[in-house]
Image 1 (cartoon, rainbow, N blue to C red):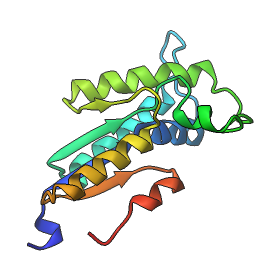
Image 2 (cartoon, rainbow, N blue to C red; image 1 turned 135 degrees about the horizontal axis):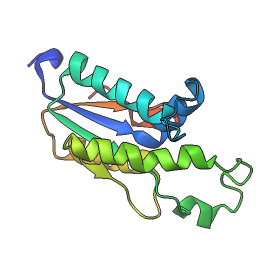
Image 3 (cartoon, rainbow, N blue to C red; image 1 turned 120 degrees about the vertical axis):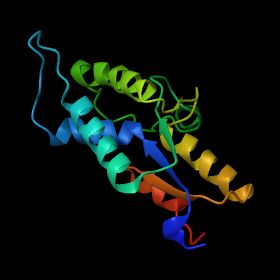
Length: 150
């Protein structure tokens, strides 16, 4: 079967995409002052994926706001990153609400980042020899390690 005709599984690194949208777009706010630029950017990309790729399966992975196993093993892991602004943090739950409204599974796991969750899904798909093309949407270069010729 040609790769273009195979079913598609789109795996979204929501944490990376929300951050990218937040920093790339100007501040967009409701009349009440609620900032939604990251939600707008994320949903715009999501709708474009639906239209252009027409995937059969989609998963949205999120980080949880707690330390991961990497923080426990390496004290300096992301220790020097500035705390995310509150107006960004509030948008994560809004994106989760949107994805659930679309019927998209929202996956997050205590102790792991979104790209860890996506990596696990990729490995499961590969190990079970499922006949799908896995497409990862992220801005995180660490995720390149998941790319293979399969």
